[in-house]
Image 1: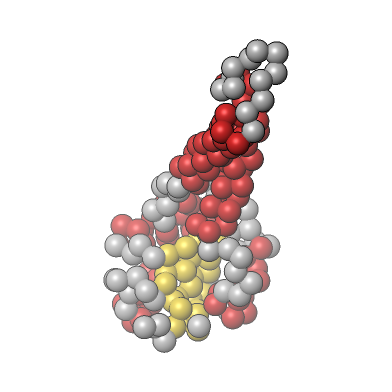
Image 2: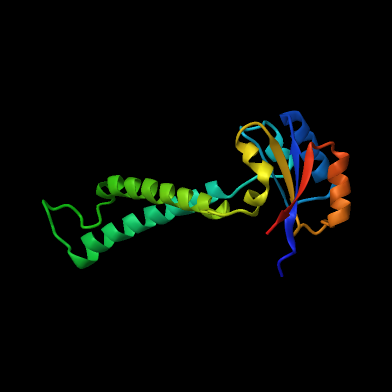
Length: 177
C-alpha cells in the first residue's frame, strides 16, 4: 500500500548543514532517506547510512560468467562439435583460449557492472516525486536537500516535521506522490 505522501524534504544552504542534519536523522533512527546536493559532499553518504553497494560483486559474477562462457564455447567448438587436428596439436589446447577468455571476461564484467549499477540505482527513472517540489530545481545549483521517505518505519508526519524543524532548515516541504 502506497502512503498518501512520498515524504518530507528539508532544504539547507551549506554542505556542513546537510551533513549534520543527515547524521542527526540517522542517529534518530531514520533509514529510508536520501540527500541531494549540486556537487559531491564528503561524508554525506556515510551520514545517511550508505556504506556499501554490490556493484563490485555483480561485476565479478559477470566476469566469471563471461570466462566460463568463453571457455565452454571454445571447448565445445574445438573438442566436441568440430574437432580439427591441425599440425598435431591437442584438441583441448587451453593456451589458445586465453585471449578470447580474457576479452569475454572484460566484456561480461563491464556490461554486468553497467546494468547492475542501473538496476541498483533504480534507473532509468524519468519521473521522481521530488520533481513536484518547486524549490527542488535548486538541488542542481546551490541548495542541499534531505528527504525522509514516508515508507520509513519511524516516519510520522507530525513527528518527522518537528524533527526536521529542529535541524534548522531553510524550508520543509511535503512531497506528494
